Length: 215
Image 1 (tube, rainbow, N blue to C red):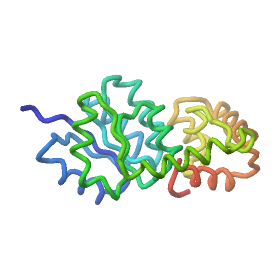
Image 2 (image 1 turned 90 degrees about the vertical axis):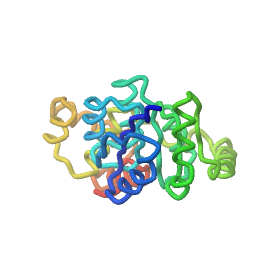
Image 3 (image 1 turned 120 degrees about the vertical axis):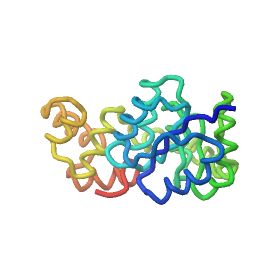
Image 4 (image 1 turned 135 degrees about the vertical axis):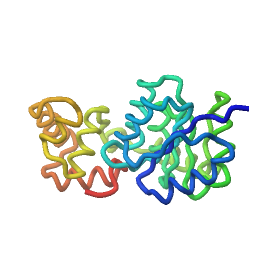
């Protein structure tokens, strides 16, 4: 029986090696990368059946990387493995096209089960999240719309993450293949939309919302 081709993405090399050891008898691990943009390049080249990735990754976070992956390879299956036990992250992951959502603390025992499930066309969410998600849904349903954070577009999220990671306007323009003026426009619009005044405030917002782990 042919093993499924799996690509791994996480910004910690020890985590990647741990996942590889867990999966090597069950899957053909075709590559390991440590940032979201390297993931897109590797996926285009290697054509995996499944991608296992973290949410918090440099250059492009896991949720936005998932969105790009599904555009690039519509048939690829994506499983998010993260430390974020949060209903909003789960919702955004599935909106982006993920088929599975695991927590890192439970991934070891569930990984192959989740992979088998999503490759069969099912969705998989770690049972650890069940109670937490129900409680979050109750809280969110009682939260007035006016107090919730405004939604950013995928491009705005990309610009915000790169600004928070200390990239210059020119560097962001090159990474996203857009003009510096367009980057400036997005940055200004994000700041107005989120009612933020400084790059430091943008960075804090990005870290709080899981778009980056560090400036």
